[in-house]
Image (cartoon, rainbow, N blue to C red; front, side, top):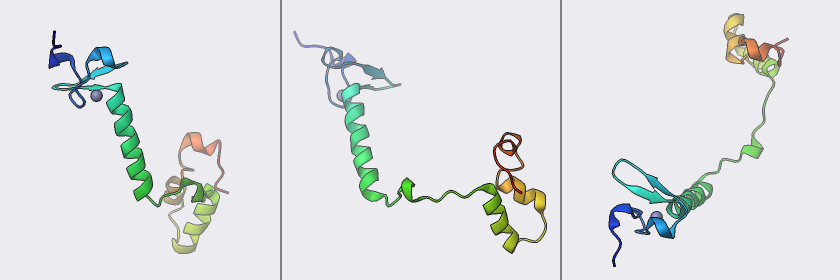
Length: 98
Ligand SMILES: [Zn+2]
């Protein structure tokens, strides 16, 4: 007896019995295998296209950023503190702008 396509993955056609999980959308279903395959394809595509390397980012302390801004912006001390996060209460406890 042929299974109904109603409960099959809309992408690969596998039935719910052939997969671990089936996710229901508004008008489609997708199985866990298709999600994993899609994730891997996206990951490979992003990795091969992107020159972005998070390990090459240099993070500066708020005081260093403010010192940089002081070279180019005269006054506006409150705006500078807010722009580097020192105007925010939770960050004031962690970082110092002095
Ligand atoms: Zn599928």
